[in-house]
Image (cartoon, rainbow, N blue to C red; front, side, top):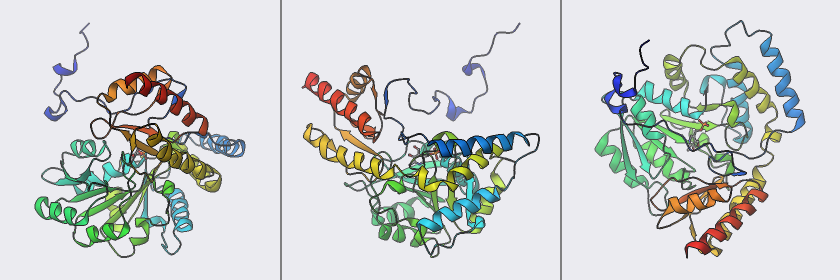
Length: 369
Ligand SMILES: Cc1ncc(COP(=O)(O)O)c(C=O)c1O
């Protein structure tokens, strides 16, 4: 029998040589505050409806699912319209995929690619360079301002210099939690023909969630708003991300998507979650309060924290952040080593989880000071 080849024996694309699969450690520890999940599982009524939907799907699992996911896209449009009255979205202006990671990869497949550029504003979401790499696009960054928002003048200069075909603006931004004002977004979109993607993965956690780029869609044909059900919606395991944009942008995604990319289960379960939107989102206020408490209490422990509109906070700086991360983990608290050197990110979990985090961090800081 031939031995299994090593990766280095295979004709891997040169730009993938030495790359590691992306992902935060998935460790089974008591307090998991590292991937910005909503810590609250669905209640019994939602679970019952999810099970009923699963049973209905099982009876027809011999058939392919709806390739266009029309009912789901209608439900997503309905959800956005209910949160942003006047946006008048319809299924043809909404597209869905397996997480907003897939949505944004499809946008790169459709609008970037060889010889084209994707521009983002650092520090920002660590998957953006991977969307670009995986679609053979060049990834470039311009710096964020000192408050970590995107300065439209800096964006305009970077766009003029690099001529990107896609501009990615995360707002609230990961890992800083910073919102970029709608006036700045408007100026960025106004000044370019590139596709401008405002990644609002954490919008529902913002202090002013109604100030969404969804409200600008009527003004700009090159604007895309990306959303996810993974965070506030407490549906990370369901894998459902979506975008709202002009119908032609949705059509571009339809060209590059794999056939039947959204399974029947995904579509059915996401529709159930959307039918229970108020219940799925019921804990958002509680999580916002935990976030606000982090912003107040971390400075009292003697560490800096960056103002956040999301369900996490970036705190630091530490001389050796890996050491702090490890010492927290030793106490059963998992946070994320990401973002600018020396900083760590902690998700706003339940009040009990936050309590365990404060206690562990207090002990670790005593040890290292
Ligand atoms: C800014 C941002 N965008 C997009 C995503 C992707 O989320 P998902 O693929 O689960 O929809 C994340 C996940 O952490 C994120 O932080």
